[in-house]
Length: 359
Image (cartoon, rainbow, N blue to C red):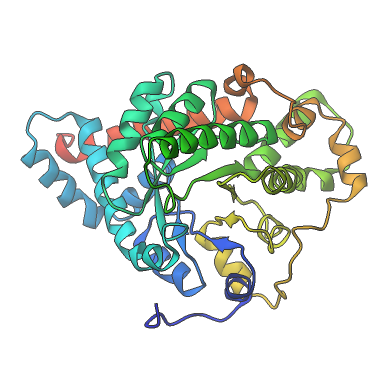
């Protein structure tokens, strides 16, 4: 990794002086190269990000999509679109492979998300996770933190797939997902398989929890200090991190869905992953902020008191606030699943416009 020209700034300081790992919240190759220069050691992707990457580089991707279609004359729009996503992922994974080798699988991974249309079928999710795991040695596969998803997470982990738990917004989801990963790792190890270079992570989409609570406050006309609403995701993340450390989970917690710089700054110092979109990395690294460990600084009690006025915050913050059966009906889960499903439909439409252009 000595040939990398690093870019000094708060992100690099944190990456070099704390156990906090920086991943880029996109598989866009240009962004990922720059993120690596900031100290980035991984990248995540989801259906919305993949669609956006392909759409924004249509000059590059339209000919490739036409080629995929020509080489596979019986494939439908979905199969063609997903092949483009897989191709994009393999190219991004190659950029991270030297980091993967250096970190022995703990970092240097590129996330590929399972098809959200499989969200009701645990076997289909696990089977696709195994398929995606075979795309490159340093792939980590996203599966949602729902009841069905947890079944798939344990099964895929047992089958040797490093998982990035997604569609997760709460402490109970994170903890139950980590437990599913532990079961899968234990089953795999019991059969004599090596698990030393597996690199599972459990995401909390901190900004999406904030977004949802802001919606609830407006919908239910709750009088609350609005400043507190910027700290809900951070509070859930800090609590989950403490539980992961206490219980010795082998997965790391990952913060995603950034909405402000504190979604990074308040978590620095933890043995965890932060995954800001590239635009937030640029803002942070161009600042004069001094990167210091703040993971052990609690969220102000007055903010927690305000947030506890909201039932859905209590459900998200209490480790037993929701049952596994309730995960799928949690507001941000339904909203995010619908967004990911729409991104699939948008990618299908984009492929259609390329291979069957309007007259």
